[in-house]
Length: 224
Ligand SMILES: Nc1ncnc2c1ncn2[C@@H]1O[C@H](COP(=O)(O)OP(=O)(O)OP(=O)(O)O)[C@@H](O)[C@H]1O
Ligand SMILES: [Mg+2]
Image 1 (cartoon, protein in one colour):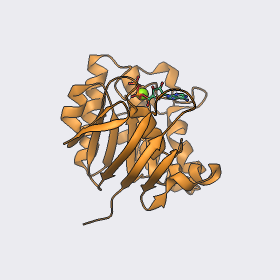
Image 2 (tube, rainbow, N blue to C red):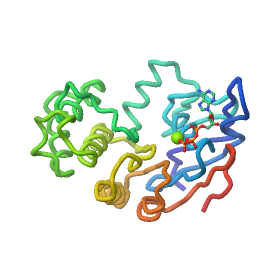
Image 3 (spheres, helix red, strand yellow):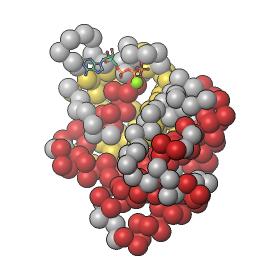
């Protein structure tokens, strides 16, 4: 068996107040898996994603991604880890409105120290692949929601991450734009990309995921 991309063991995340956001979660994701994380509001979905991304730390347990013990990283190492291994897509795009579409996509590559020419070629290839070339010099504010989310996906992929993480990627989109992003994520998975997405969108889960993990009250209720 190949090494897992994600390996969570006995992960609990407690806050000072309230019940734990996650309780004793053990989860393995293998290369090429596409996992949809479902569950009611407050069940711990975003907490799980943030722990995998190294944006948060567990109270107990271990988080290993692409061989790195993510739960042990300091701030700088955690940022480096994300740049090298993880692409992140959020509900509200999180694009920089002062930069052009191309520069938004280029930024993670520049931060990772990719030589300028190689970074530009990779960014332009992604923009072309995602049908965004004609918007390359526009700022994101001029684009539709679906186009912005495609830019966010291009940015997430520019460093060729082992893992694409998405938190409600269709949550802010209308039906047509949602369909567009669903198709894009499904194609990426078809091309071998390992994907973990949090969603309330059952159509997205059905079209893109090979596996569904259902959380309830911070526990894995179902994994199929
Ligand atoms: N910084 C925090 N401090 C205290 N409690 C928090 C904090 N962040 C999250 N929680 C709690 O942890 C639980 C899980 O939150 P989480 O954001 O992971 O839920 P979710 O499944 O993503 O919900 P949604 O579908 O609404 O996005 C919730 O009860 C939430 O109130
Ligand atoms: Mg959430």
